[in-house]
Length: 444
Ligand code: BGC
Image (tube, rainbow, N blue to C red; front, side):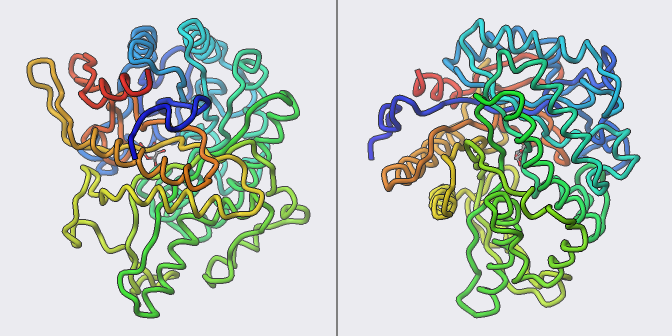
């Protein structure tokens, strides 16, 4: 299959994605309140070499140059997130006008340059004041979130039409409340179940708030997904893989589609029912305009007797001795094809957009050039698989590279570089990588 932009159709959306905490910096500037990530990074040994997002790419101060660079790379769709605690320093109540002003400037300049903004309303940076009240484990978070969403739509909705409610609820509820490796660093099954249910409620509620204020909006939400395969054909491994698939790929899309939680295969998950109140089942459902698919790799799963709740574990790419990225994730482009087919198979599934995909490698800057053939190959192979799915009838309408700039990669700090643009974190100098030049040319 010849890989050309035209093969995807003239309405296919090409873009790049970022997230506020990973690039903005200016963590306490102009009235911004702390988020759970601002407090989490201050704890010792939570983040690789105790890195923080305090400065990150300093995008808050450099957005003008960054948007011009994006424009020069022919990028015409930009997915970024709004920092909740920049808008509402305490999470609720008092509005910080400087926060609104920043995003107004960002949106206005994007539009001036012909770049369409796609806003993610929540990319993991819950205001710290709300975490003190229980964060995602407190059912009130649904209303706190709804109020914040309404402020964003009223402030930016005259110019912004494309919204994503949540970024990857599976990741922020599991990594943040069960494994404790992401903010807020809590570790309990009950915390996870409560957070998951409230995130699922907020996902539909946020979308309803947007539609009520802006009926012509294009509303979606995003899911992390990985194609799952059993390690062997033994029945135990197959069963373990099914459980992992449920958690990684089905937990949030199924209630959204009105199918309820897929709790039957994992006994512990049934405990989520404790948090479900009257009418919640209907409230979890919402007809989105699109679903954001975020895929990076596949997972191989085997039975593991001693793993609590699941009796399943991931067989690492490293142990399997397969090609990996700097995140130690297997390079497996077919994963995105399988995921697209899987989501398309749901009845009443709205159009799909790949709102994140990319790869981290240890890039180096030499004589002002970053030669990153592995990333280039990765993106090309992924696009081949997206095209394959599209040609087989999957309704996939867009692709956003994760990510525009090398940035703060959560618990991994600045070590893995995902950007199409290299950032020197000492000088903040930006250098378009070879993959970035290729993408610019491809989407021209
Ligand atoms: C997240 C990004 C993250 C990327 C790479 C996604 O799970 O949405 O914030 O940087 O994956 O790990």
